[in-house]
Length: 361
Ligand code: SAH
Image (cartoon, rainbow, N blue to C red; front, side, top):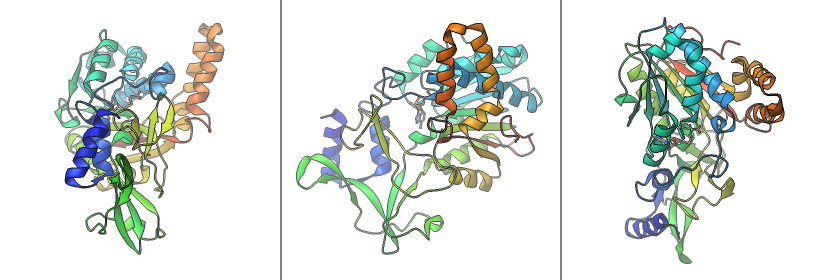
């Protein structure tokens, strides 16, 4: 049994069932036994793979996006580039290499990485040891230096803990993690006995009985962090993740271990846990907060608008022996049955800026 499971069983025995957000928070970020603090889970040998790990072209496109965004802001002397959940630092390294097209941008750039995992922070330090601009770490967006900012995050929002509710007789009951009454070593899903009074379920008034609704308390918090930072300074945030453009009901909590889906309750701390990102809520909260919102756009459209096909053709011309590999990489990023449609890009920015690159169509 995973060490964290032993501790969670004890905790639930003492305190009663825990909600999905607490379970997810512990499984992902428990400082001693959580998934992220204890390992580097990325890449082909790890538990899951992400777009920047698939191809350098992904980060390069984001790099051009950053350079153009800085130009759109009037080329400020200092531009804060803040990456949320940078994983192994590969995307930032590709961004900064692509950004060499504009030396003035690199002179203005100051990179801040916001990372919850000490293990990944170490890897990021190694990957970015020779970065062409200053790189440092901060605990949150608010801790990064003030000033005009670009905020980026790939597969960051899907790690934010979600709460789940099931509609029963017109009321919403929170889904919790409890101990199996038939097996004291097993965790099971259950429903709280009393309906939840506090959450705002207005958007789901029409949901059918039995529907499962997911709410991510971290989204409004994230929007608050953006609006605070973008008050007084120009700011643009680009978030890429998987999820639908319109809110959907249904259970999306998923656990991945060694690239295989596993039971989320089986070995907490030993598998990655994510939930789809609700881009409708993200856009709505952004609008409420006074931000200008662009997208969500399918990842394929976004990357093509930034010039992915031209980049792939150029790389292929200079390395004919890698033509197959490059074609496969581009296909994984953009094909309908790969990441092309499921993954979306959304941009939230301070009012008054130009339309962000990639979102002009
Ligand atoms: N962006 C990288 C890694 C994605 S995995 C890539 O695309 O390859 C998710 C990353 O977000 C990890 O680095 C994880 O440790 C970090 N993370 C998740 N939730 C976080 C939080 N609340 N604060 C800071 N980092 C977080």
